[in-house]
Amino acid sequence: MRRPAGSRRLVRTVTVIAASVLLAGALAVSILQVSRARCFALTGPVVCRVETERPLVALTFDDGPTEAGVGAVLPVLQAHGAKATFFLIGRETAERPQLAARLVAAGHEIANHSYSHQRMVGRSRGFYERELAATQAALEGAGGESRLFRPPYGKKLAGLPNEVRRQGLTLVMWDVEDPQTQDPAAFADKVVTKARPGSIILLHAMYPANATAREALPRILEGLRGKGLQAVSVTTLLEQARRPEPSS
Ligand SMILES: [Zn+2]
Image 1 (cartoon, rainbow, N blue to C red):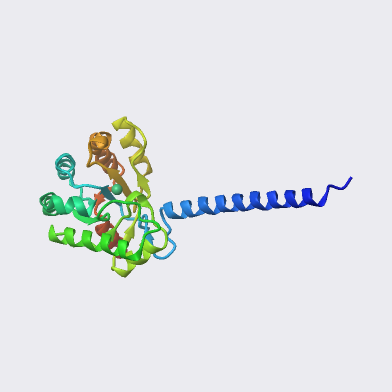
Image 2: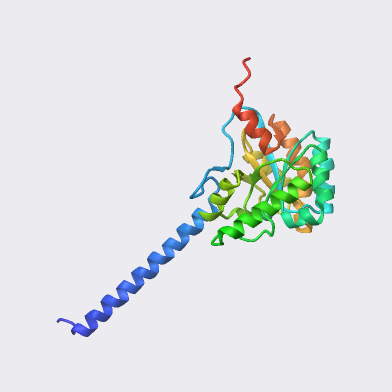
């Protein structure tokens, strides 16, 4: 039995709408995945780790600077002879330049993590330009020299990587990140287990919610040393990896 023409048209219309919704959904998921990809950006290079046999890892801290965070992290790094890169928020750096200067004075690297820490996807070119340039000025005012940028929430699509490149910055992501656990020992063990030569380790230690990472830090540094890995800044890791291996 044939269905009436009107009913056939309705079925066809519903099928087309359903297929379009599915396609739009799949596209949205793909864009989300690309925006979050650790080692890939649509319009420019990304560093998420460095290929090297040298026993080095880059230790990186995002956000701040805050008095409590800097106060908690600096002595631990010093006690373990470790160096790190701090991706600082421009606004917080401009408000507390003395904290950023303390990091520089202790031999650490300070780098660009945007001015206002908003999601940097689907914004105007002017927005990206201001966020990066104002932060770079705040960092340089505190004695910073690095040209590294890490996007807030690790989110980027086309416009941001373009602007990062235009301003002569390097987009830095990570291959090891702070684990989802409240237990400092488990936290440290997970980080140490994943770390390998050339890794870029992301930690958060600046705010009260980051107590686990702060407590885990000594154990992380001991664990890295136990694996023969030295913690350095991202710029040091990039420079060392470029040099020829010492002949033994
Ligand atoms: Zn952040």
